[in-house]
Length: 551
Image 1 (cartoon, rainbow, N blue to C red):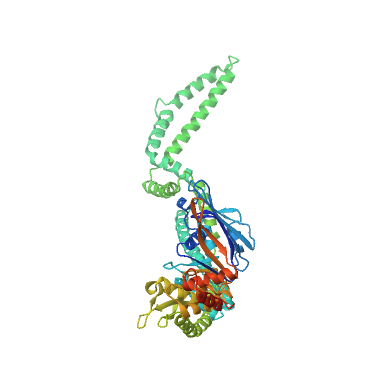
Image 2 (image 1 turned 45 degrees about the vertical axis):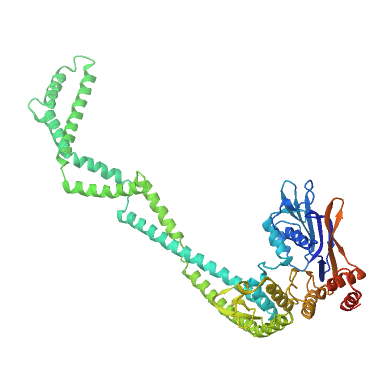
């Protein structure tokens, strides 16, 4: 609820304050007096773009400030979300400097336009002709029907269950994705391990068979060279062994004749024995070494398996491969089977679907039950407002999937004239028709929905007399439940005001300025009488005004 509007240096308003009634505030004035300027100032509070052309004095900044009572709107969460100090009384302020810079504040906290627009949308419902109004919004249409069906408690229960249903569905989707990912990973790890298991790696094997392959591939050279060495050392007539044995015999004959010969001879004898042993080893290695093509192929195939794994995993040793194999085996064991958890969450979803189905069906039944009565009441009210041939049709259709409000879609269809086809409101209704339709529908749900401040700009266009009086009665009835502000030129509506403001122009120095004042009783009589007959009002108009005002 808006309590006060303060305007400084805006358009042709130098400075003005307006205190609004918590029920019906009526604003009247001569054509061109500046009633639209008030709506422009409210537009700034609602987050509309600012323009330096709107400055009254180009050397000063423009300030528009509104004070709201938000105690009934459950906005604490919004304030916490946007890190704004919350209080039941909220001050919204727009400032515009001569340079064109615009700033917005909520309780002295700077906010951007998007935040301001979101907040003000909960506080002000401004109805101007040709605006897109919330009656076009299917979610608001559904909210209206639910209020008439007294579905609030049931919807809260349904939405709590639907919230858990959505949580379960997201959890199931995540588990299925994890399971699919795990399955792919398990397949990949198993494939890799299969390659390791087929090779059957053995620690130290690579070095051993690489050595064996070297021996086998060089067997002929080994046999040839060692055989030649064996023959040269012991088999040939002039072999080294034979020559050395002759020398050994000669040394033996003189070893006792010189003190050093004993040790020299012993050393020589040892050398001869070592050479004889070496010759035997040459012979043995040469005899044992045989070229084996089949074994070479077998070793090469084995090494190819090892080298292939090493290249694939970018390592150079069997030890590193065995470490990789161990890591793969460990990772494979870490994957758990999610099928049991998936089955459990699927059962939970099915149980919740059953509960949701019952609640949604109950909601749908209650909605459909109130639709005929709602349509009839709207038709009757429209008839009172000189739209006796206009009709509203509430179309309730069923959707396949649960949503946050059940399984229904609500769509208001409108036929403005006799024989007209029912169509979307925005496609067939004029600005005035939309305003009157909005007035009728909201007056029917006013007691059930905490509506924002409803501001109607010339909702009475094209009506007068008894129709205008009935429109005033509807506005007054709506104001019993919600704050309503109406800009009007119709006396039958003006007399319903709980607070009547008059907008007028006056010359101040060398400039024309717009001012607003709250009318006292005598001033109201004169203002209403002027609306009835013109200025100055006639005596009969004054008496008529008193009668309308019930004075």
